[in-house]
Structure formats: C-alpha cells, structure tokens
Length: 77
Figure 1 (cartoon, rainbow, N blue to C red):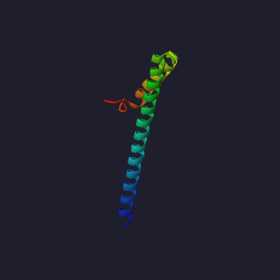
Figure 2: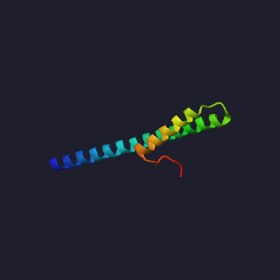
Figure 3: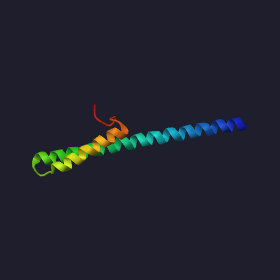
Figure 4: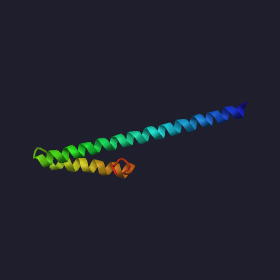
C-alpha cells in the first residue's frame, strides 16, 4: 500500500511541476507579447510625429531584456 501511495504522490508532484512550468511559459509568452505591443505603439507614435524616440528606445530595450532572460520564443515567425 505504501508503494502505491508513494507512486501516486510522485505522479501528483510531477503533474504540479508540469502545470507550473506550463503556466510560467504562458506568462512569459504573454509578457513578451505585451512588450512587443508597447514597442509597436511607441514606434508608430514616433513615426507619426507625436512620439518620443526615447520611449521607443526604452521599449526596444525592454524587449531585448526579455529575450536575454527568456529567449525569443514569443516572437512571431
């Protein structure tokens, strides 16, 4: 009986770890998408004459920082 419970506990822990990893991956994708959206908006505003080049640069640096930390899997292919 103890062996069964140990296996069940291990399987539950593996499932929790996989679920947490998937959640973290989705959050990373979502954050990357939001950063890209901000970069696009800053660039568009700058091109239209109402934006600040410094804001575009900050948005670009935020995207680059996210890529360094989490990779570029959120970028459209």
